[in-house]
Image (spheres, helix red, strand yellow):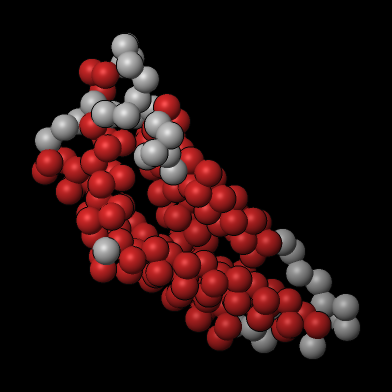
Length: 168
């Protein structure tokens, strides 16, 4: 019974990530303009330090801003779908053999990896370092992106911890 409880907790944590990613993506669709402004300012680099010698990186075309934002939203929603599907697979495999439960982790792992890719690579690497988001007091999403990345990494690590059945 303890093993199934641990597996249920793993499925629940993956489901919590699915809910989180769904809400983030949904909020960006419903209140498109609010976070679009964030993307526009970061890509335009219009709030970085004066005299910045890296301004050649700035992207100011509106179509680029909308495309980047659409890709962000798509990645958020894809993360939600994959982790929801993964949570369901984990739930269904909760009583399976070790190999069966391990196999059920695949889709959840892909969803978590996509979310990490979005918030770590997209926001912390490209946004913060390439577009110098860290220089902005107003348009700086580093703390939130770091928090999201850390949570997804923690769930991914927890998901892949080996399980032992104390009754076996």
